[in-house]
Length: 522
Image 1 (cartoon, rainbow, N blue to C red):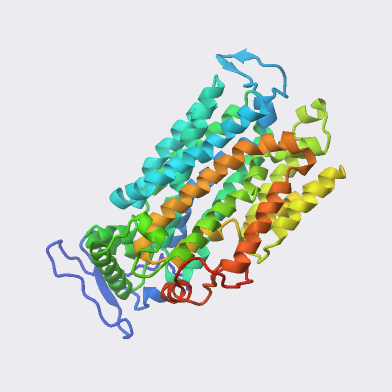
Image 2: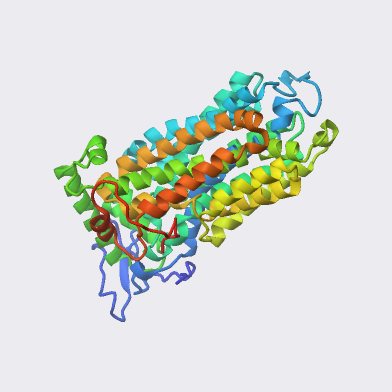
């Protein structure tokens, strides 16, 4: 239940050297006391924090962390609407003013490479972010990561060459890769058991919110030289988040894992205002001690995990997790997010004059695509094979030259994707794998995800030129392969503990006959 953080109860003053914190049975009628930061004893409610739902402080801290996800979405979406202005100089010929060119003319292949530098940077960021966060902390990592957001934004908004724009995209991509790993980790470790499901999809929702906001703002900033301001907003977001992060607590789990138990207790209490955290904190410490003993006794290499040389053969579950992260990007959904303005401009046969008119029908429809994605994550629908069907219908509409049909099914494609395939792969590892392999497999999965996105981003404009109205045929095929894999191999984890899932699906990859494709986990 939500907690009113405003109802504090004064306690008696104690010095730092005073008696230790005291507690009473959480099931009793009496409240308990705990020594606060100033040394005073604070009397709190007797409600056990383990049964609590979302509260205002937890939501505020999760939202502050998720500003990195909003920035991720901003970086992804900010190149879409102004793409024709930047690469084709659609708002007028290239002119230099105050030392900056109005556009950076380049072909579709080179533009695809520039766009693809972001997922390539995300791959690099995902490689080191986990180790950095384990050593220095989740909050510290998010703070340090904002340096990449700021530097990347400054490089892009001051670009005088294609190379500088590409480097800026790569640096911002590093920040996106770090954010994709650490935001979900921080929110998961800060959440209560009953709020974990809500915060599970929070990261993907905030990415889509950032993407949508970037496209709304881009409507007014897609002319030369205003597209530079559009890129610079990422730096402002990073600076704003850094100021707020100074007020947020570090992950209690991280602090406890480093033996900083008092700091961990204080952080947990801040996230659970006016609740009794005694039992939850004890559970947290016990779980960390158990995992550290396991890690000390046995830490398998990545090859051991992939080849089944672990106490329990995890190959089936590991391959399913990796496939989900691979298929999330080869679906073609990110291609829509990067290039929908160009695709729709061609589909609606917009003239140069119509393209120069801001906002054009293609730009307005692109904003709608971003909005529908955010709505879909909230709805959390259970639609699966429809991504393949939508891709086929986009091809049919393109071939028949029916612009509204193409636009409608691009909307539906994004709606279906974000309803399940967009965020469930990010949750799969923690629901299917034991803790002792979670770090290595999550890192590998994130790397595969980013590399496939790099390839798709690079090839999308090339395929657009080569295939024309048949652009979505390859994505229809890959989505159908994903559907078949899910029907045959994907485990059902709903209502089961990780231990139960491991026992049921251990062994090499084998057919399980599960027809519930990417069903949202409870």
